Length: 252
Image 1: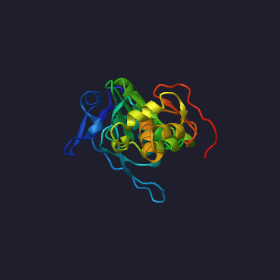
Image 2: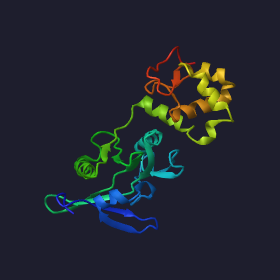
Image 3: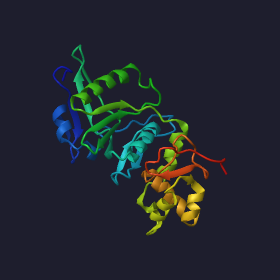
Image 4: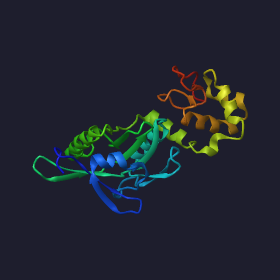
């Protein structure tokens, strides 16, 4: 299990039994996006946010999340149109360091992309979170991913405004927010040309009924706006692919 002879992967099979396998073989054959966590997320006394479950709009299943930072990154991956599957801590990587000592690490997130490649990621609360052990493990996991043409990243927290916007839109990710038959088409038509959010909503119907549909379309990329600007009634909203979102007017 040294980094010269290859990494090993440990994961739980569909019936909950631990399996250890050569990493290169597991990466090719195992659907990690369908597996449960290989080990439980720790509960840390005094933390304001503990382990929980996130309902994924991508898969229609719950995904385990161990921290607020991880849940935010899970939201971002769930919204990414390239992602076809996500999982929390589905695999432990093992290797030997240069002194021959066995080392292991469980990346927090796994994401499968439409082209078959994958991402392993950790979600630190700040760049140096986890100290030298985490940074050293990151280098090893990055090397393991490069061997199989995957990607490893330490996903740093989003800015306050993009994170707040993402969390708001996530509340409308469920298919029930598509609205009644024909309403989504009316919404997309109302924003065929960029216009303030409230104006487009009023053009499509009663804003109380229409706004959840607009937010659902924004979550799924059918509409777009500036993620760096707080969502408010005068923010400009445009069609998918629109490259110049901005805002007009003031909040309220």
